[in-house]
Length: 275
Image 1 (cartoon, rainbow, N blue to C red):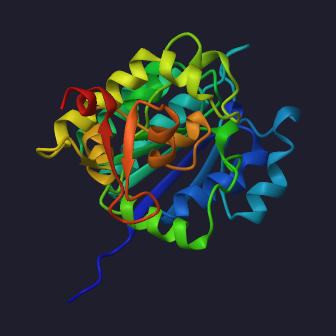
Image 2: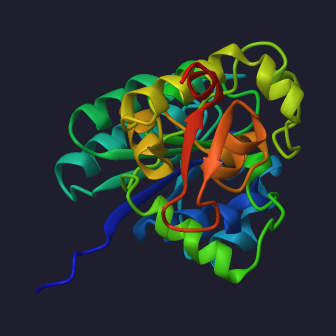
């Protein structure tokens, strides 16, 4: 039996709206999903503000794409990236795109790429507008990359990986709800009390559990992640938790069963009391 080929990923970076110091973490994240065949960074490289990118471009073999500003106080980088992404979509036909930017102008591009069957992994700052975040298959805040502390040993990490293996190749991300969740830095773990006040988050989690539960109300975490992925985008690290299982437990709204194993499951505490 032939082994499944890894995803072919095209990474496009809006250097005008992305920090060079996060490039290592971005490449590490994408490399767990597939092979980054195309690596391009766009910007007006004559600007002093982009001088910090030079060493990174050489270190990680990124192709710099020069784009001069056609008018004052407005760069043309986003248009150049959009044109190249469309060309790559129909010529090289990558399985997925990595879009690094905090600019919501890329939202229509992301929606088109996904409509044509390509996954889109977005990376941007905490202030990235929600339309762009929601449009991506998965979106990770740059502040959260590499910041989640280890919570368990190697054995539990392996079991957690197995439990999440049934989630699609494009794990989605839950966008923090308006209000309290958006007010905190992405690198900090949101406390349980604050999670319980996030009605958008709890509603999304409960709907996913209810949709995938068995007759006793138990739902496999992997199935919960899959259901959420079909509805929105999600990554527990944006809340400061290393996995969906940890986030579900932190809400204190669900019972946990078989934690630390590949059979980890959850049940809504409200339904458990009713039964």
